Image (tube, rainbow, N blue to C red; front, side, top):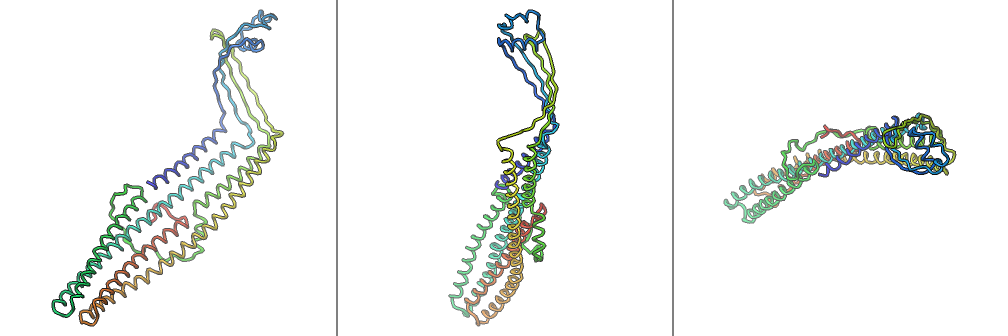
Length: 412
């Protein structure tokens, strides 16, 4: 559900920014308005003017007495007006460019969210694999070994070669492993639920995990290359760079407000008292606006825009530094996790060989049951450490690719 909320939220922002592009583009088209009005007046000037508009003036209307005290007159007016900016100081053009850049910035934000979601799913999948293989399968293998050892101890006990205490210790060990298996199953269920949450599906849905927990990539090398890749590919860094460009264009827009603007306008009007007779007229013209003084508002707008440029520039530099640090940390974590794989794999082989030696010596009466059980625990821990090192490397590489901005839909 959280995944769907995050993706829906950012996609809504992208859709809104796309709509703002259309809004900005509308400024290049003529604005057409239609209005319908009704009024009744006895005002001498408006009454005479209304008759002129209705084109019903008669000689009697020039009587001074009717001039000064006209009868009430009704007027229904329908007007179509058109306004077209010829030069609006570049406001529409700059605004359209800003809207396009803003849409691109939000699209980059959506890309970054998708990368984070993909990595969250990869990490949750790795956690589920670790819980299944590390906590469940290793316990199961260890339990099988413990049962085999129990049969051996029981045989030796019946032969009188070991005391009953050895048999009891072997039974206790099996009981402990059965409890660990139950705990491991609960951790597997919890990890599967977290994976479902990460994928945005029903929490109780079950999947068959196919990809084994193994090393899928080589050791990362050349830190400088990873940092360069991060600075080139990170969507959030590109997003703030675009915001800096938008802020620079806002400075141009604020400065352009000091220039004159030229607009064409026209209107067509129909006037009538009772729709039996109508008068119509039109008006066309051009208007130039030039602000001489705005109370220093325009100068303050320029200063505000320039301050915003400095702010976004500082934010971009700060994000660059943060990305370098994030990439560096992820790089060294991935390298460390890779090195641990080799050490842990060697430890498994050593622990397996150690258990074989201890088992043989126990069978020959040279070692005690304690030595045998310790060797079992050592092998179990070595297997756990090996699988956890594989998990940690996979997670570290996912975070390194996230830091570098190289995560896509095919990443795994």
